Image (cartoon, rainbow, N blue to C red; front, side, top):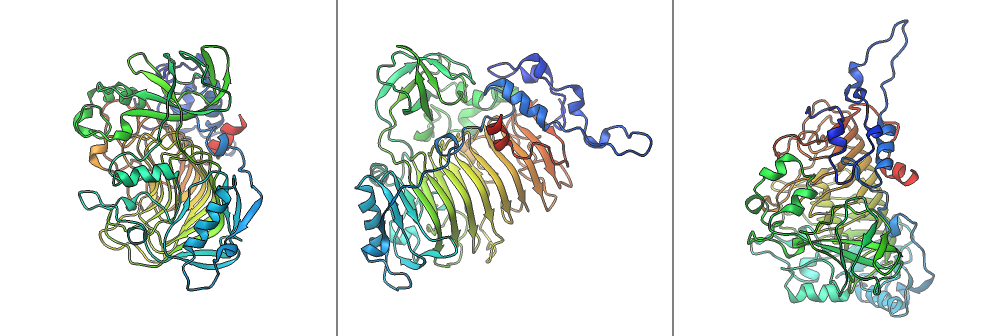
Length: 564
């Protein structure tokens, strides 16, 4: 099959776990680039045929099981709802913080947050001005919002990186984990923080799962109704974790990669030991797939309906269960402020001391709005999160390592309206900037309505799948990264939709030669094709690229799916 503008065959469209109707298959005209269309007579101008609406209709008919297009319609806070704004219960100035003072205000901020949290939540107001903080702000309580007067008016100036203000966090290789996680404002349950500290940050990073509530029978991707062993411990509205074993035969990994032919020839234990059970090098986080999902309804003693379609098959050889979420934090917001790190020279790659921004870890249904991060190693971080929404966020100042990081099975997060500014201090020798990071079996995540003067679409190995970047303009000057031990760059159903590249560079944006069962629609401004990335899977990748150099009528895949 041709990698670019392939015919969407019945074999391709019916290759997923659940079949599309035969009538949904695109006609052969889908394979014809706009430039190849016949020129009409009488001086009229031919308009390229727009296939984006047909593709959207196919997705809608597939009920969450389209073989190429991810279902991203449930991304964001509470599945895409607007965050609530609780009443004001405190001001940081009531606890001793003084704008414009040289006195450390970190204790005042943390005391104000604790005051709100221990009273059931509420908004903690940060009046306009600049505040000095010598250590992080810990958001350990649900239903607490930290709100400034606007990102132009309220500045939190952090004088020290995490390595100095909190603790060092080095791997045996001497790489700093603060290069990709942790925040000056850190939304994390105290139990999760304590466990990480007890493990010296060298083991788990994710959910502290509770009891098994029910065993789950086999099901196909796209299903919402599940047969379970017992529903007596489940209730409508519960957020639970669907946990699926990742056996040593790599069957789950092949499936998440789209079950294309090359996944059967790929040597999983050797090339992806961090993902593969029995390899001797598997990360504890990848021993199971863990997908938090809400129970929409209990239909009987053995049936439940989920609030969104399954992202992958459940098979008898991959035992699955529903587990309680365990200690976590939810409904935390950070709004209308700037996180400004003390300006220090950027280090070489992965030696960063933690001049970071805002990090969400093992939490769900949180948000940030009108937040700017300056002079950072990591700007905004999702580490094992569910349904976190960022709106109107900016990364600026000196060069960054990760402007955005989405890792360790982080699911259904939404970045809606974002900017990576031109760096005021460029990258030094030996440093890298990535851009929009996706890694670690993360799924359902969306970046939309963005501009990027720096960075690229960084798919950072460990096989993220079913994610989308849509309606974005970028210069495309970053680099893809990831440990070679983490295995494939891409799982199935990565969508790049209505992307405008000002430099003509296709690196990491054009997926036709590298991503299995994935789709690109409307990549504009390219002067050449090809991802420039190493190919993990050989053979037919069964992907599709449509409407090169054309702005699609469906300009934003997320909003279109939400409206369907």
